[in-house]
Image (cartoon, rainbow, N blue to C red; front, side, top):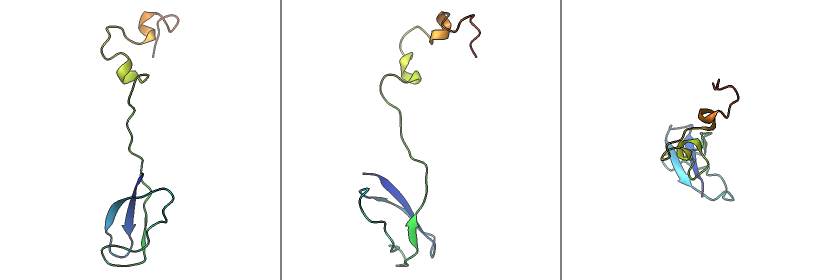
Amino acid sequence: MPIYEYRCDACGVQNEHLQKMSDAALTDCPSCGSQRYGKVLTAAGFQLKGSGWYVTDFKNSGSGPACGSGGCGSGGCA
């Protein structure tokens, strides 16, 4: 379930709520009871895990990326 962040325009309190995507948005502020409690647009927090990502591809092996073995043509990798 996603975590949504809400902020009250009346009292300024800001909270996170764990909700289903199908749940209706909250409208009542838990702090002051105002009807001005709404979702805040925030960046999603996620991590890339598993094989296939550059950070983990060459972490334990002695080889570097393909450009180290002449994979970039004339060796002028940027």
